[in-house]
Image (cartoon, rainbow, N blue to C red; front, side, top):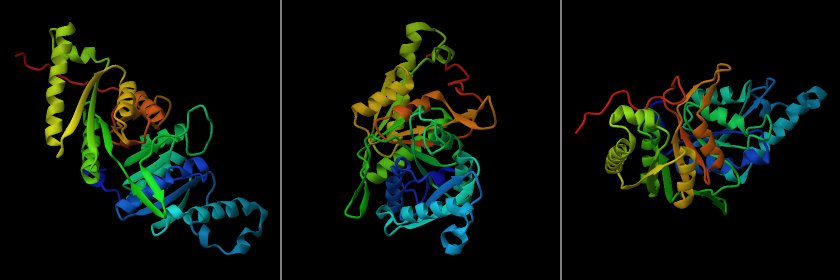
Length: 327
């Protein structure tokens, strides 16, 4: 998906659901962004069996057969969701597909020109075929567009009062590593902050990259780390100046997901934005996220907007491939 398709505001929103109360937590975000972008919401349910495309308009006698009771229940749940007050005044429709949830969500995003997917996550300890836990992370990995991952209960930025849904974002935190995988995330975070009048914070985490640092700065040791930090400060300064608005920059050391989550709590971020380069699973054809991204999603104090980049063949591509000239 091109950068032009990643521009904010989002207009075509996909809301995958199993009609559970937990999945419903992501609906207000779908509605909020659709209102903000004067767009639409597509409700998607994936089943193990084929569902008639015209399920919502089928005559009642079709459901008299006991074998069709599940379709009657599915139709009732879909109609109830479409009548939810969050969707009042919005263009909303339901879609039913058969197959693997994550792959069908990704295909629906392509087929319907989706700009954003909103999905609620659960802890991995809850083994369910619902849209939660690992399935939500599979959706993030497979999606061709941005995915907003919500993990209730956490700080949220969408208010629904008196029939009105409003987005209130005061602070956006984007994590960058200056790899191609984070470029689209940085651009999208900047667009959101500018559009909503929010503070933009950018963080770079110096993690366990000593091998890469030694390539850049052959002197090694503490001197290399000091020079590396100076180099990153310069790059972060350039990022701030070219973002279109003054961004507060942070350079920290530690485990990336821990530092991102900690900083988000400290600045009371409303939204974390991450680039989500993925790699092929060793155990099949599915795409999988890197462990740091998964941990940010599972531990974040606020929703996480995951922005896809080009697929990579290793979980951790090299930070650099050549040494910087000595000065």
